[in-house]
Image (cartoon, rainbow, N blue to C red; front, side, top):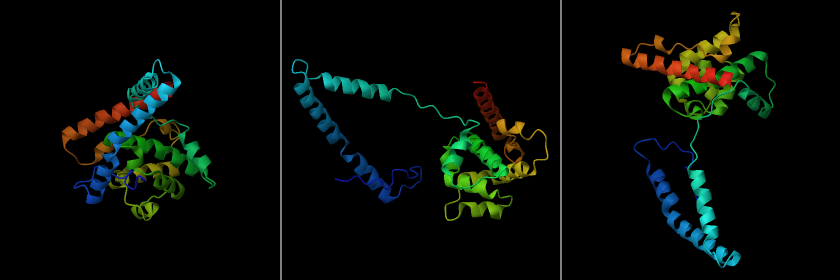
Length: 220
């Protein structure tokens, strides 16, 4: 049978879960036990052919390798100063100095707000929208909205669009001599928005923690 991967990259946090997605989840796991049994039997048969005195050697070797993979801990990637070059290389567009500065800032800003919200960067701001923002360099809400085109409004636009436009404006202005130094340390003030004091204090702590991550990354 052919596996349907239509909802493989869907947002599985939505509630209530659509019926089609529930069906996809059931079908996606329905054959796992059967597949496990088939792989186990195939390994035993191949093990007998390779070494009749130790027929389970291939199976044990496979289980050992899968255990090693399962023990690997995920480490959240940290944005580097050179990450924007990878995007530039994949693009066929010619970039102005301002566009490059905005792109570099956007990558760090996206990582920054993703850590604040405990979300993935691509969920907060998909790559194709991020690239369009860097290309268009919007300074108004309407211009920013046009950058997403037919795509759904990303969470980063909904929650932090004021800060985003402010940062783009500062990059375009380029009036401060310290602006280039701020590339390595985002100067976003999230606490100016009206919010309960406990939440404000928690955000201040999280921002400080994120800044420490960037500092450690630069010294590494």
